[in-house]
Amino acid sequence: MLDRILGLLRVRVIRGVNLAVRDVRSSDPYVVLRMGKQEVYDKDTFSADDPMGNAEFSIEPFFEVVKKDLGDVSNGIVLGKVLPNRQNCLAEESVIRWANNKVVQDMVLRLRNVECGEIELQLQWIDIPITKVAK
Image 1 (spheres, helix red, strand yellow):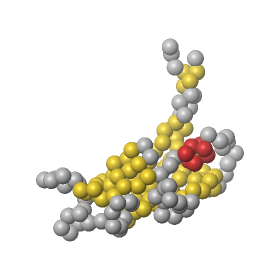
Image 2 (cartoon, rainbow, N blue to C red):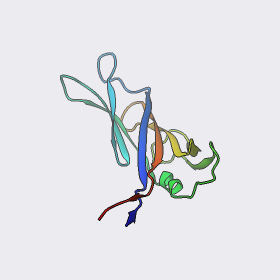
Image 3 (cartoon, rainbow, N blue to C red):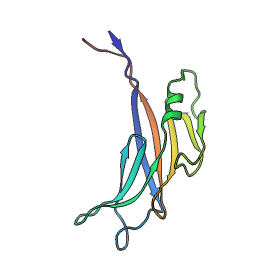
């Protein structure tokens, strides 16, 4: 019997921009990624970690593009766009494109529940070839 594993979603945190300071002079931020929601914290050694904001985004537009037949698509072609709105935390338009034989989406998320801060992310789809599964 043949089963198709869709693939893997790689999420790269590119950088944080203008993040809130939670310690005396700086912070040691890290990101917690959950399906559809991410949170940023300041890592503390001797006390509880401090929340530094959160953001939500939908991966549905990304997966709509992944499901298409992209066999003859040229490198760099824009496959879709997601605009900022009240339901997402996008700080600017997010483009879904074909790059190096992969579907890629770059996004800048404005953090909520904090005075300032943005997180730059990149989603990348990695296809997994059809595999035989023994039953």
